[in-house]
Amino acid sequence: MDTRDRILKAAATVFSRYGFRQTNMEIIAQEAGLSRQALYRYFPNKESLFTGVVEDLHRAALEAGEAAVVTATREGRGLADVLYAQLDARFGHFMDRLEHSPHTEELTEENTALAADTAARYAELLREAVTRVIRAAITVDGLSLRPGLTPERLAHLVIHASRGLKNARPTPDLDRFRADLRQLVDLLVDGALAAQPDEPARTRRRASAGHR
Image (spheres, helix red, strand yellow):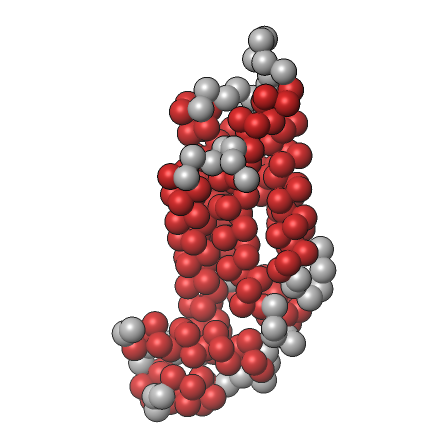
């Protein structure tokens, strides 16, 4: 692990432990095993360091989602299973790091204030990634969507509904989120898929869900 990564890991730990307001550069330097002067060579202030932590968290969450897609696809899972794996890995990455922090609300507020551009950029990357999964299911598995529904629109609906579940409780509850996400994705995918002329609804559901 290089010095910058060590600093980001230490900062994430300290922000989670003390919140944003009570954290200072001296505490982070101590956690990272550096002098404060050495820390300032990488980050000029606490705000830039917090933004770096958020950027790193978004990047890792997106990568976790992509890895989950690869695994679920290799296992021959259907669209609902692949989407669930992708979103669970992505949102779960965030929630797992906030679940045991007593400062979740404060950190969320600072994230909105200091890292809105970063969040918006990664939200667009997530939308593109989910759209690719849906397009792949249409191309490879021969699925089709209901008239008037596009892969982009379905991706938008799935992501925003999932984000609503994530933000539904002041304190993260990863187990409850995963149970709700599983049901949500199943319902949205089942409702989005158009039945083929000779295909009963229950067959369509099996195609969307794959092997569970």
